Length: 114
Image: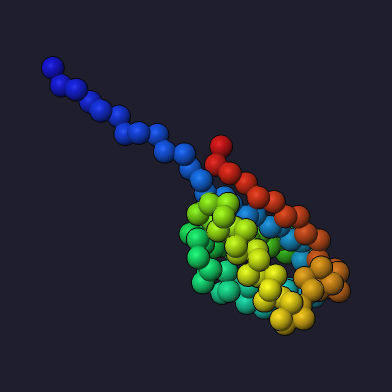
């Protein structure tokens, strides 16, 4: 008779920040440049496990942009938010004003594994 030991269940502490944007075609170049700049910054932050920028062409000519960042845990997500806000303040960048100027619609959310 053999005994099989199950691996202990370890809680998954990862958090996923998923942001969805509807970007007018005329604003795509400016929006994409900013998103990729942020993407490069986020990749360097501690606790960033995965960072994706995805696009989907819409029938009306607009583009849906989705960003997905997997963070190791809640602490690294909060630290990253603080770092990003400090960077924006130093640059004088206001994300909401930027999106309003371009006519971008946004939805932000933080998710856990189900």
